[in-house]
Length: 632
Image 1 (cartoon, rainbow, N blue to C red):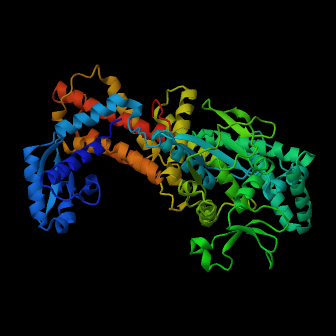
Image 2: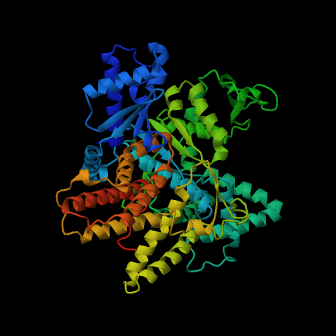
Image 3: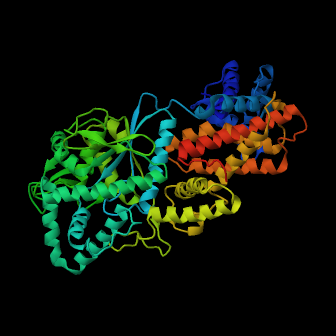
């Protein structure tokens, strides 16, 4: 697959390298492409190089002399993609693109490669596990958890686009205290909380959970009842264990339905009870105990606890009161840290365990969803990753570091290097309040409620623009617009930025939004549909600054995908799509397409906008998971 921008940079790097070789100059310490960059102002060149400054001391001459010699050598052997090269004091090399050639390379590549434009083989032959969402199975997904799902979904899509074999996991804590509270609430309070026809199961059970949590807070004596239920849940094979499985299935099915509304799907559901009962932790602990850094405390307040010593890693661990982390408490119960280390080992195939799997169901996209199950079948199709990305909130930074550092301490250096915590800030309510299941602050801000609000607005807009359209088609279009608006809102912010919900932003249909980009594609499709045929294009006629700007932006798409995938900066894709859509609309309002001055220019502009639509489709549909309606 062709990466036009990378091809251009490499062609300039070749100019530099050829000159260095012909002059017998010492090669710089980095690859020549490292010294090719985009200047802040295009008047200073489309690309430039400061290699003359970087190597002047080594070559013992002035930067201007080096730059002038490179220019002289280039003139003897020019590159077809470069129009001209200029030297600017005190030694800059400025390269100007030969747009007649470069435009043809860019547009022909996009139109030829179609949906594969931007594909790469970075991850070829490698498997990556992306774990995301992992919502508590006691209530519906709220916008905070949905941000996790969106972030993880786009990350998986990016990695898939760059050649990785991607496995998407969703871990469910079905043994936690909150689940026990839900079980008690279902037994005692379900008759008090009406199950209205419009309530999804996860919403109704969420209301029960909130009521139960508040009731227990008011009556501390009920804690003993919750502990009893917890014990029964962990034992399994009893009425409480069966009840819990029924309830969490009801909630998780609701979660999956919500996620599907935003084109988010999974490969494997992992239930904590299966991890605990599989013997995974025991197996992993035996392997951990072979390390001199994992041992049992003999005396003191942590006597009989099994710990992992983190002090070999230095700060911040050595400055802590206790430089170790407890894996197993004195009563023999494993900690979250211990279980997380064991689970991370399993993901890499470092602890096989007796995990079994079965079909959970078929998702809306037709993909089979598997789940862990005691009565399932063993399979090596899951786990055994080369890389693991855990998408978890910022508050888990230190715990995740402990998990990864533990792998390093135990000698699993490669697994340590290939473990990545994709951290992000949560979504907050307008009053700067965090979402709380116990307090019920999620009510009205759960993802379904937001999607429903967006749907109402979208439906009104579609009705206004298309009053004669069939009602069912109006609704389908509105659903695509609404889900796209919400998903894009959660996707466009960098992961370290905290999102405070602004309804006008969350369900915005203009400006920096998915509907704006969707409308751009619909507009282009309408223009293309009116064209009888596309004749022979003459790309040398694409000389307007708006056309050049679009071509330059189109050419950078594969590089943007690669950067986003390698750095896990998923928000680069939404921002790229917004930028490209903006550039197209500036062009559209300035220059005619169907009424261009001649047929060759018309064909060139038709191919140009066709390439824009193709690239935006890849960005929206394939990489962000937002569909494009047939009409708006």
